[in-house]
Length: 444
Image 1 (cartoon, rainbow, N blue to C red):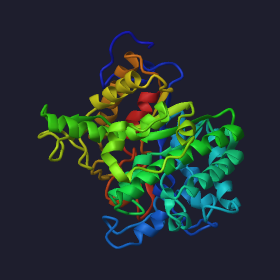
Image 2: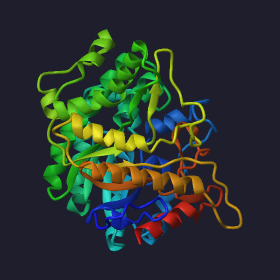
Image 3: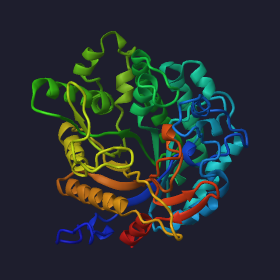
């Protein structure tokens, strides 16, 4: 650290972090791009899901979203104006390979190449996520991630993207939040494809990890100078009381959210307690799968938003605790707890990057201004928590605020605003919120 005095949230600045620490903003393809039926893009599971009545809170979809596909140059100017080092974006598989197999779509690859070169021209590092939930619909028709073939097709797609973009990209994450793409999507049914089948969910979780394992060497072969890793959504799962049944429930919740993905990646095994709890629903794990999945990572991306408070008869936010517009508890200490736990529990932990951290609030624009003091405080307190983890010896290399701009918030539609930049959807006008101005000043 370059400063000896402990900063406060109000005095915090980037020089409090190690030299070379990366600061950025992040988005995902389906949430911002729009142009769902242009230039050869095929349908994704989210197009299908949004078309089903009752799936999306406001009945909307991502067909236009933030129209980033057409406004990308102005959006890159906006990113550069914030003074960030890096931009994390995802590639839409159905835009690059419309059916999920067979020939690649040149127009789709061209778009991401323009995006990559445009970032470099503006002195912003490109960080790519290969999969942020928009599976080509034909692959879902064949079973989706629960079908083992999807993992092999994902590796082919990943190879094509890495071959085109190469080392111009600073890092490649294979997957974003496989818990969401499996458990939330195949068991809880809240996300596309909207199924409620635990057996399929666990098969999909294993299929995703296998897809990661198969794509990782392809990325390294085509982009040997880039970092290659994966992004998980993680959060402490704490017991609602010290009663044995609550402690056991919290342990199982931690296993299903955190250890079910961390243990195969960093230990080469599934957690025994969760495996036994899942009974006959456990996935078909073939010989050699776990060895592939446990291949060393250049980085582990961590998306942190909140913690879980878990009891045997349910959980919830503690009474009186501050919450975001999503109803999630604002708990910065959870980030420190999570990172120090990862360092203690996983000897093979690679360098960590906070790939998403942010909050939704009910922002309103008035007089050309958007005042969001709660988000400013959220960013400040979580960056302070990150400093505490660094001081404790955790090797964290970067931080990406979620999100660059308001966007399609999945099953919540356009009603939840996570952006540092306000988007007026009817006009597509972008307005810097106070949080964007704070982040820019912090980075200066």
